[in-house]
Length: 549
Image (cartoon, rainbow, N blue to C red; front, side):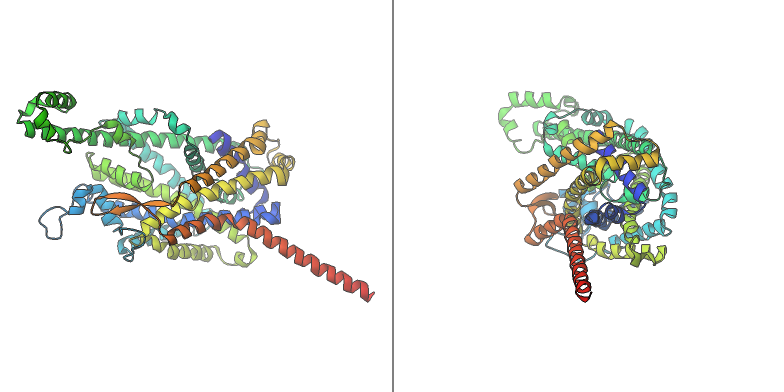
């Protein structure tokens, strides 16, 4: 996916930005006035991402501030209201789940129930936006300096975590699981849609941020070399961070597996009145078979009490997104020596990654808007402040008790469909509307040489065909999937359960999917109507002049 989509489209967007010297709206309008909506679609998608992405940084601040305690607050269950024992909800779940869902989010039972704004989260969210503004206050001048730190510091932390992760018990189990292919997953179109989306997000394709940043380059800057190097470093970083993640995930899964075996061992010892050393976690399964054979009636009483301890099942538990970042990692960290140190390092790294992403997202909004004459007269500091303040106000909804459900909705439907559509139209526009030959001449003018056959084959054939296939698969999967669902937290069960979105939620999903995509045809229709009106006015004026003569 990197070779067929990522690198060619990364190259294309850098070339467009560097040639046109404009943000996404201005660049595509310069290619064709009918395509100004393509840049607008990128701005809308980036806006959606900005609205919900900073709440992740707010959660990171929340966890970071709570890491400076003698005992991490997600390491054990808090006392109940009567202070007679642990919280019932926490006992039914796990301490890490309880801290995330109850202490951090104070989550409601469903998206339909809202208990107001979580004050702590709102303050962290405000802090995240204040820092974002300070990073971009002087425009690209201040952004460039900040990126040096936000881009390099996570590598330091990841390297430290790599060394620590490899020394953890069971880390090798996670590494083996990571590099063991599942052929049935490779045959699933959803896997490739997710892979494409991951490439788009990691490289910033379709958001307009690459065009925005490239517009500040020197005209003869070698963006071809940059496209190749940055894409390879990006993918290498993804693999590197995955190794670290799966090492820690293997440790967490192994600890859970061995705890399950220990609970089973104690259950067998107590049920059959055996000596302490007669069963170990290494021979639990053999003793189960033996006891079932020798004491079938007594063993039958354990029906429903014996847990199914399986390391493969622990490793294959699908956890991603916020669940991986704030629950799985937190659970692994609490079991490490000097857990406070590892917690502080991890959440500072998460903040640097989040803030670095926000710089690209907010630049993808600001740069195209600054191309409009009516907005270009506003000072950079004031304009950037206005954009950040509007995003802050619109994003406060994510700090409510039902905010996590809205976050999930934006995360699932706010960008994936839009990015597939935007990038598809981009490559078709350059290849068949602007023209490959004309694009080649532009590149030759900037670099001194024309792109080789690989780039032309990707732009003209492979990339658009693959994107069309992924786009169609996404639509088919969405239709066949039935009513959209989400994971709602059930405090009585102490776990998440899948429920359907209500009607207003389904309507909002439709709005998210259509709003950015519709910018393209609506803008084209507006330009067509304006040109037709102008042509009619010109015709009338010509007729009047003829009659007067």
